[in-house]
Structure formats: structure tokens, C-alpha cells
Image (cartoon, rainbow, N blue to C red):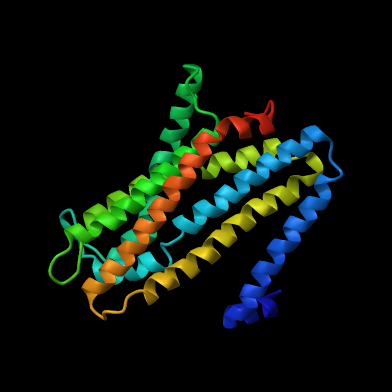
Length: 264
């Protein structure tokens, strides 16, 4: 596979063909497998597919750290975090992982505590909450334009806090999603459905890169201030998209619960 991977890395057109082709093939094969399932399992697999599609959308919005946010951090953030001087891209690249390590046990304990109180939201509502956190995070990225100085550089403190907010969104969705895919998939399709879950992550990063490139091209002024406005306008659009997705998930949660049947 190494020569193929090398070619894909060095020719983005081939990468596009590969990504679109494998997605179509995966959906077509899943459709074929659905015809061989009984009605009960067919509904569960359709529910699993909804989770996979929403995970793809989540990652399309979320996975900006390696693209647009990296450029944004390099040019449009000061290097002061609380009382320390630090490269903003160190924060951009590591804060999400740091917050996951710190807060994932606490979020897990929260679900356990809510379950004991019979207040735990179902999986589709958790997905919706994850999107709402994601939307709030990107609205906070948008708000960085209001904290910028005359040179077009904004607050690293607010940027770091925004990653904390987005991390809570990921913790409401990522680990829970993998669990629900295993519960909804027939044993015969377990490997394929998990493969599609990770394929959704790959597609999310693929589309996130496309969106980040569009944001970069939107900067026509050539100054740091114009770049700040171009990127934050893009983050506002992503925040609105996440908000719409979260509201739709919550509104249609009862329908997805019916497809899931006894799985919770």
C-alpha cells in the first residue's frame, strides 16, 4: 500500500477520486447488505447509518485544528496565555487532547450519576448536545474578532477556553458513538459498520480541509486584520451549521429511538 499512499499524498486529484470512490462503494455495499437483513435489524442499521452520517458532519466542522485554525493561530493570536508566553499553535495542537485526558473520566461519571437518577439523556440527545457545544465553540472562535488589537491579533486565553468548550462536545459524541455502533450492528456486519464509522472520520477531515482552503481563499485583503475577518466569518458559518444539526437531532430523536428499538 505504501506506493499507493505516496501517490495519493503527492497528487490531490487522485486523493479526491479515491475518497469519493470508496464512499460510494461503501454505501452501495451497505445497501446490498440491507436487503438481506430482517426488518428489525434493517431499522437498527439505518439508525447506525444516521449516527455515522452525523459523525461525518461533526468532524467536517470540528477538524479545523490541522488546517484553518493552525494558520489562524500562527498569524492572529498573541503569545500570552495567562502569565506565560507560548506559541499559539502549541495550544491549538495540544489543548484538545489535554482537556480530553482531564475531563473524559468526569463526563463518564456524569452519565453514570444521571443514569442512577434516571435522568441520563439517550444517545441521540447526547449527539445533539455535542453539536450544540460544537456550535458554541465556533461562535466563540467568531467572537475572537471582537478581542483583536490594531494588528489583527486576538486573545489566546479565549482561544484556549474555546477548545475546552469544543472538547465537551466531542466527549458527548465520539466515545458514545463507537459504543452505539457496536450495539446496533448485526454480528455479521460489525467490522464493516465500525469501518464506516472511521471512514466518516476520514471524510470529516477531508471535507474540513476543503472548507479550510475556502476560508483561506476568502482573505483578499492581504493584512492580518482582513485574515482575521475572513476566518472568523467562516467559523460563524460553521457554528450555524453545527447549531442546525444539533437542533435537528434533538427534534427527531424520537424517530431515531424507534429505529434503535431496544438499544439504548
